[in-house]
Structures are given as C-alpha cells and as structure tokens.
Amino acid sequence: MTATAGDLLQRTTGALAPDPTANPVVPLVERGEAPTRTLATLALEQQWVIPADRRSFEHLAQRADPASAAFFTSLATGEELASAHLEAFARACGVREDHSRAYVPLAGCQAYPAYVSWLALNASPADVVLALTANFSAWGGYCARIATGLRTHYGFGDDACAFFDFFAAPAPELERQATEAVQAGLDDGSLDTAGAHTYGVLLQTYESMFWQTVWQPA
Image (cartoon, rainbow, N blue to C red; front, side, top):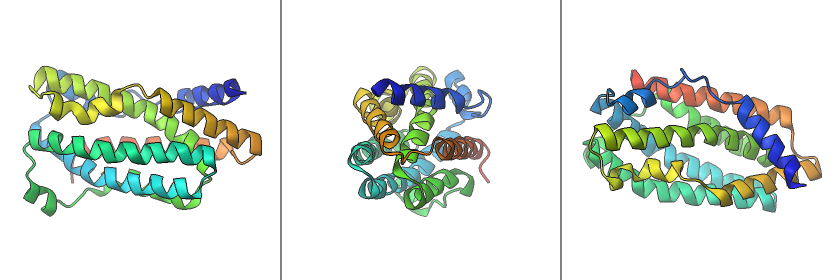
C-alpha cells in the first residue's frame, strides 16, 4: 500500500526537479560571491514568507482529512520554529529591527507564498501534499548548500545558519506523513495527480522567480 504512494511521490519529485540554472543565488553563496545585500534581501523576504506559509498550512490542516491534516500541522509547526532561527540569520546579515519594519517586500519574491495561500483556499489538500513535497525536495537542497557557503566563506556561526540547517535536515516523520496523506488520497479517490502536477509546476516556477528577484531586486 505504502509503496504506491511512495512511488508516486518519487516520480513527481523527479518530474518537478528544477532546472539547475534556475537559481542564481545558491551557487554564488557556495563560492562566497553573493554580496551581503543579497543575503540581507533573502532574510527580509523570508520574514514575510515564513508567517504567510504558516497560516496557509494551518488553514489547509483545518480543511483536510486526518492524514493530510497531520502533514500540514507539522509544516505549520516547522514554520514557527524556523521563524526564530530566521532572526539570527537576519542579524548576521546586518538587518536591524527598524529595517525590517520599514522594508517593502518584492512582488517577485512574494508570488510564491501568495500562490501557497491560493492553494490553501482552492486546492484539494491531498493534491497540495503531493505538490509541496516535490517542491520541498529542491528547497532542502538549496538550504544545505547555502549553510555550507555561509560557514565557509562568510564566517557565519551555527546560530546564523540554523534557519538553513533546519530545512536541510532529514525529516523522516514528515516524509512518513506525506506518504500516508498521498495514500489516503489515492484510496478515497480525492487525489488528482494531474492537478497536483500542475500545482507543483507553478510552485517551482514561483520559487525560481523568488531567487531571481532576490538576486536582482527591483
């Protein structure tokens, strides 16, 4: 039973893997070539993304069947934990509290959480589980590479890198919950794999837009 959902998750993740050239920021951080202003922009934009995604996941949990609800509740809890780590990264980038309050976010970066909010309101929760899980695979890899670059080239310590370490770390419980949620959607017929694929394509497109905008802020 589980293998069916696991195979679908694996195939979808592979099909939605981003173009290696779609993210200009991560390789620059890895080489120590990203300017501090780019890192600060990343921190400031994430200060808007994280709470927005948390609320979207909470709403999805309220709408979902028990299996999908467990997955989204875990995501919402994770966003709350990540928020505390984000402050340390922002401080290491020179972002002050008054800077955060005055900052106007960039539309190209906020398209991603706006779409997650759309999914929270309109999409079948089981479809969102499949689409998000595929997207998170790329995000986790980006975070691992950023954490390495920050330590190697920018002298950032563990506190400043904790935000990226958090998302880069293996999450076997979340993977188990995703598999159970997808399987429940297959079993009850609520999972639309074509729809989930479309959502995943858009999520990856908006994520690429996020990184392109961070690199070239308006």
